[in-house]
Amino acid sequence: MDTPLVDRLGRPVEDLRVSVTDRCNLRCRYCMPREVFGPDHAFLPRDELLSFEEITRIVRVAVDLGVTKIRLTGGEPLLRKDLPELVAQLAAVDGLDDLALTTNGLLLRDHAGALADAGLDRVTVSLDALDETTFRAVADTRASVLGVLDGIEAARAAGLGPIKVNTVLRRGVNDDQLEDLAGWARDADVTLRFIEFMDVGTTNGWVREGVVPAAEVVDRIGTRWPIEAVERDHPGEVAERYRYLDGAGEVGVVASVTRAFCRDCTRARLTAIGELYTCLFAASGNDLRSLLRDGADDAGLRDRVVAIWSARTDRASELRAEEGLTGPRVEMSYIGG
Ligand code: SAM
Ligand code: SF4
Ligand code: SF4
Image 1 (tube, helix red, strand yellow):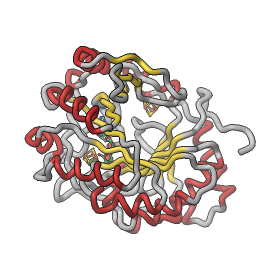
Image 2: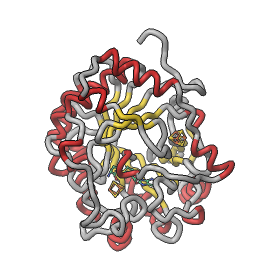
Image 3: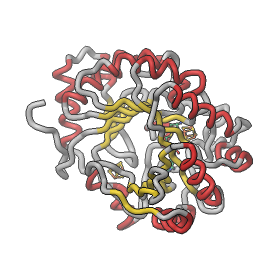
């Protein structure tokens, strides 16, 4: 990298989230409500998806421009066939510090070993409830929370740690799970992060009253177990971290709605069909696949990414705080959470 690539607000590009599929084996109501993502939903056709080689080429260019962290996501990334092959290709990219995966955990038991062998560094597992009835209602599934817990143990056994677990709390839906989840995570040596429910996309029925503010989460945890704030590791870190004073590790909150952090946002997202998005709340992305398939060389690809990132002005969450979000937005399961 010659001169560091920054956007119009001076933000470098450091993290790239790569969606490998828009399909999922769950139908979390806040992400892929079954009424919208039902049997008739048109998921992306297989031949539209970027190949592993195409993804790796884009990642190599992105790393050359400053990206140090890659997170594979979706949809449910473990539904993508032969994913360890992609992991192996990405693990071989020079300059990458961190190769992670976000998953709902249900298929981790079967895949953790192969992913670790291929060079995956760590996993984040999404888990919104320990109570079986609540879990099934939130994820609109007959699968069991025990499958997720087994997946977490398999990941740990495979060396894919330290394990992080993400929970999206919604008022009146699963906010009663907060203390149970925090207590479980303390005992299970897992770092839990509570993420505010966001108005991603336009189909998940978001209302501000459904958001459990991070400040309330911190209060409730602190009432049960004394905690103190921990300094951020780096500016782009989205979680606000707290340490349990009794030594039982850390817990975090991601205050995407109530304390927007756009000014430090260093994230780009690549969809499964090769569109580069510069914000989770964008209406559209920038097509890189056509460039690849039309025979562009790495210099051409690089110029395009530089042009896209240099023009970036996104700060949707800060604007939401000021004036609310309106207009079309891409769905989370499509862009990759
Ligand atoms: N299927 C995988 C999983 O659930 O971990 C990866 C993709 S999922 C879209 C990534 C993350 O986005 C999950 O942790 C999920 O809870 C979160 N997410 C989805 N919709 C959300 C919303 N409306 N607000 C906040 N987080 C959301
Ligand atoms: Fe699937 Fe993850 Fe969305 Fe749930 S949050 S529906 S597991 S993509
Ligand atoms: Fe980044 Fe957009 Fe989220 Fe702001 S709203 S933190 S710019 S992804």
